[in-house]
Length: 185
Image (cartoon, rainbow, N blue to C red; front, side, top):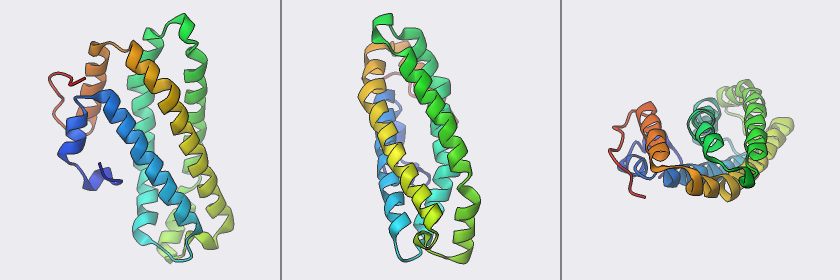
């Protein structure tokens, strides 16, 4: 899977839909790499049109869609399947709160980033914006680490094959793919 899903509408992503937990992990890895690249972009002395545009697309489209998939597809099923001894409700509540805050913070970056693209100005010349992007990247990598270390393992234990297939179908259809008929896990 490449960093840019839009140019990689490939069989890799379609194949991963038959392993929805594998897809979720791969999506987190792609995002982790993007956030690392965005953090470097914030420090770069030269304007990188392609990466700055990629950052805008990611903040406007990819990340909100990812959050929507977690909140609509994954988390309701996890809340339903988690056991009391998982002590999981608080974790999902915290992550959901974080998602809301992240979307607000990201929305504040759209106009300044678009202005940089128009001016072809490096992000590093705007110290406040550069710091905001670096801070966002660090927080999001930590957020992804929590999801990978806590939420994904519990999902693997608690979600039924029917849950996983339903998630897989919803995500595949939302992205314009034919949903898998069964799972490979």
